[in-house]
Amino acid sequence: KQEVTQIPAALSVPEGENLVLNCSFTDSAIYNLQWFRQDPGKGLTSLLLIQSSQREQTSGRLNASLDKSSGRSTLYIAASQPGDSATYLCAVVRGGNEKLTFGTGTRLTIIP
Amino acid sequence: NAGVTQTPKFQVLKTGQSMTLQCAQDMNHNSMYWYRQDPGMGLRLIYYSASEGTTDKGEVPNGYNVSRLNKREFSLRLESAAPSQTSVYFCASSDRDRGGYTFGSGTRLTVV
Image (cartoon, rainbow over all chains, first blue to last red; front, side):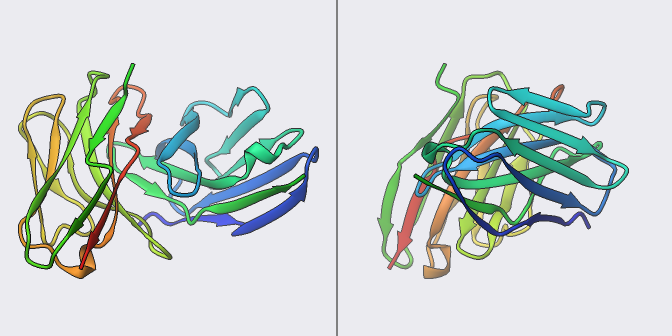
């Protein structure tokens, strides 16, 4: 059974710092990996989607990498802003199976 | 481009009442899903539909039924609501080719 873990569970950093969120998964046979953010009381917003054949994806200040062999992904946020405060979730889809398995989430707080 | 639309956004039910949560997507996605999110439990899959006319159970299907009315719409029905079904419900759809998920904004359901 696929298990997805995110470390740390919570993170507070001063505004302007660069930061890295980690995601690890136990079964490397994934189809893709997706990063989401969730604001309190809101739905999930897709940030980045990495196909299994890709190593990384970038969108603005966000960069996500994928290393299938080690079962790891990282989300890099550059020059953090208070608006980045949210819970970040990674999720994987196993090859041939479209159901998402979610990670445990990292609650990020950016301190002004 | 509306994406995934869920109705209602909020609902309070009495134990034993029934209701249907509606979900529609306008992205021509084949697959649709219903998740529930509970504190400390993360997102759990209730039911999913890989294509029009098919539905399958997820992790926590007991107490729920679904209908894939057409390619756009996927409804979730609670026949006899129980307090344990108090949760936030999310509908999602995915693009089979790319695999990326899009989520609705959620329905916050309270059963008293």
